[in-house]
Length: 113
Image (spheres, rainbow, N blue to C red):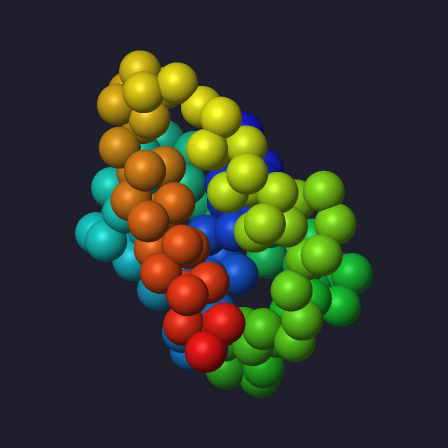
């Protein structure tokens, strides 16, 4: 679930505005409570992949801009669909995933209007 969670986290935060890697990591920790141990690697990996495949663009001041959303198997829609099937225990043990899920659902409602 790590890759899909980090990918959706990065997309959501960039949807809210351009950010550098450190700002994304800080917000992931402070706002969602993501564990620090793999956060830098997970975010860095998603930024690198996203930039390479044309989802993000990196400016000269190291801030990332969201160019397009992942519409494939790692998409927000698929992520939320899988989380809807997750057990209560899974989400209880990973409160950061639950917070991300709620934020993504809220963003989806805004996008539908």
